[in-house]
Length: 157
Image 1 (cartoon, rainbow, N blue to C red):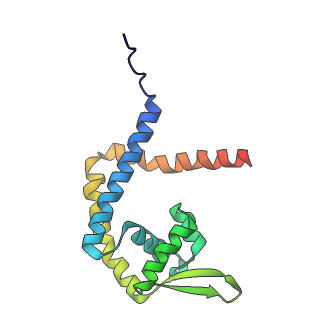
Image 2: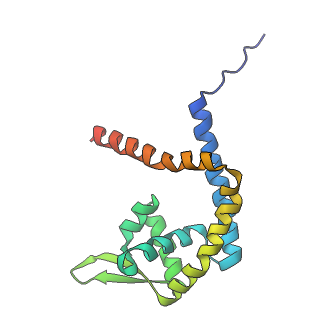
Image 3: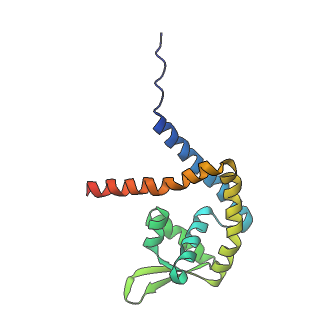
């Protein structure tokens, strides 16, 4: 007689479920953004970071840090946006190693057009499936988990 497989701990089940939700919603939002305005989710998020920054410009390393991705991934995304005339790379005259991504007028226009499509896709594929209390609880989660992760990183240094 075989033993029943051990049930996964609740924390692992929840974490795995959240990962699946994020992955699936990213795919759906990406598809909708591409269809609506011709931007990938990664491109939209990069444009968003630059558009919301003071002076509508950010260093490449800052974009990577804010998006939580490798600088090489951001470089490829910025390359595509620059080829389309949506962003411009500028070197810092005081430090030629520093490169900024700056929103072009066409980038401003497309970013403004993309936001309603982005918000609609997030609403349709995520928010509309969650009641207000759950959404409010989930809103606290990123800060709580990030604070714990930062504390753990400091302890290992």
